[in-house]
Image (cartoon, rainbow, N blue to C red; front, side, top):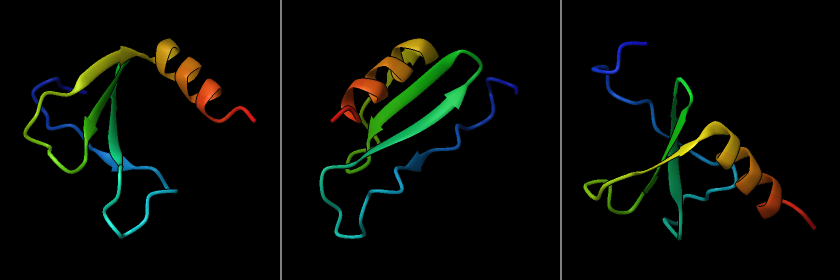
Length: 62
């Protein structure tokens, strides 16, 4: 993928249409981009795929 191409952002399937507290995620080789879906003009957070997988694992643990 060319880094000049726009990122393909998506929300979690758990996000509702009410517009609550949501984030959007986009991936690119080795990097996960995370941003606030309510204010997409703000800078995105960039983390490694490993860090994102660790976060998701902890967030989904019961």
